[in-house]
Amino acid sequence: MSIQRTLVLCKPDAVQRGLVGRIVSRFEEKGLKLAGMKMLHVTADLAGKHYAEHVEKPFYGELVKFITASPVVALAIEGDNAVEVVRNLMGVTNPQKAGSGTIRGDFGLNLTMNLVHGSDSLASAQRELALFFRPDELHDYVPALRDWT
View (cartoon, rainbow, N blue to C red):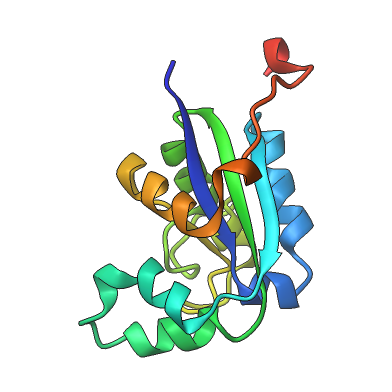
């Protein structure tokens, strides 16, 4: 068993469409644990750091414009192989190709408005969590139902 923490961002479209609760429920129902959660407005500076690997790509400007357009909800999700499990729950990046039963497949509209971001590796998760959460904003606890999930 490999307990991991990963970052999930409920993007502006998830906030504006009132889907944050339903998205969080998907992770909790899978037995993953919330280790941190907060709403914030992503600044251009934070967006630049978060999307640094895309800075030379033609869609970079659109990414920054979208992520800074409205508040997001940042989640620190913890669980066994959390990075992979979260990405599977989210579905592929393009909602039109995402499977039914995934967050993007069920609720996503298009490649830009795909509701969620999830770290793509453990290294990315560690880097991204540090961008969105201070250490004192992440919580260690044992869920009462741990033995059942």
